[in-house]
Amino acid sequence: MPTVKRKTFVARKDLIEHLSSIAKQKGFSLYDTVNEVFELALKAEETGVDLRTIIDERWVLKEAKEAGFVLGLENLWYDMSELTYETAGGQALKCWFEAGVWLAKRYLTAEKEGSFDTFKRNMEAFTWNAPEFIITKEGREVTVRVVSPRFPKSYTFMFVSFLEGALETFGYKVANREVGKGIVRLEAFKEEAGVSR
Image (cartoon, rainbow, N blue to C red; front, side):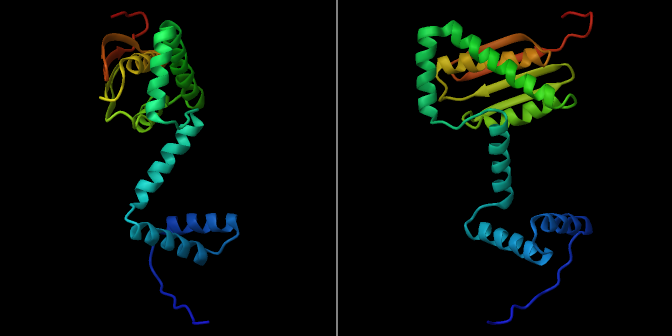
């Protein structure tokens, strides 16, 4: 068996120590772990995939799963939304609103500080079926903008109900609402104690 040549390289001390700790927990040597990291990085490069993109996409799937989301065919989802909205529109809107409330409460109970920011980041990542999904927060005001030519009217209105449920749970009151097929703009604000707008 041919001898494998070794080469020394320099890396940040904190990274090496952290990687060494991970290797020990898994019962591997630091040498084997570093080589595996290099092999995976090279394999990703050979297949034309950015390693950071792979990690980011894996994070999105993990967070979505933990938040209670499931994967499904987009056109089937829209068709089912159409049927539900046509036969029981009021009940469908209520269900979506309650789902928004539930999801917001999940974030609020998981972390008090920064819970809205985590919700915002995750929703922007999870809503990959909308080419444009932006939540901006400035002071006590929040603006949500959604644009998707594929959203049918039924899905658009139910998704708005979901967003309003979440916003309300985070303490925001929707002041302006522009909704049309595939287009949403919500402006909401948090009232200061004893002050109404």
